[in-house]
Image (cartoon, rainbow, N blue to C red; front, side, top):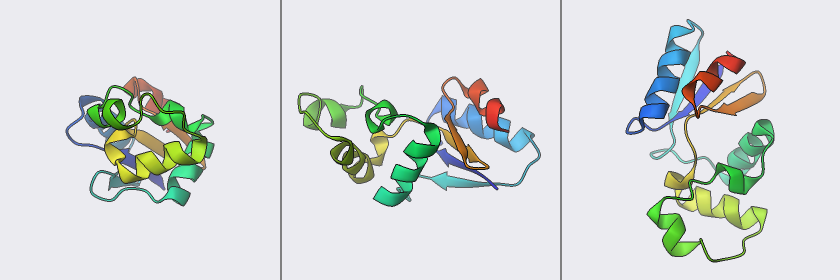
Length: 113
């Protein structure tokens, strides 16, 4: 089943959700601001994306700039920051058949549908 980590306040996330919906395939929406991923879940998502944890961080968020920008963090600390502050996680993330993609731009979602 397809999973989309979604934030309804984000236009890119809404566009990604629309693509998933229009695919006609079964999917599950995770409103990750309300139900943040655990450390283990986020670690697995990062592995599926094939990126480093810092590449999943929204560095323009005030939380990042205020609390983390000038610090040297290892991968575990970056993941812990995103778990504690899920607003830092790039969105949308779509997972299908063990592969994941960040829908920025939303058309990238089509690559794994």
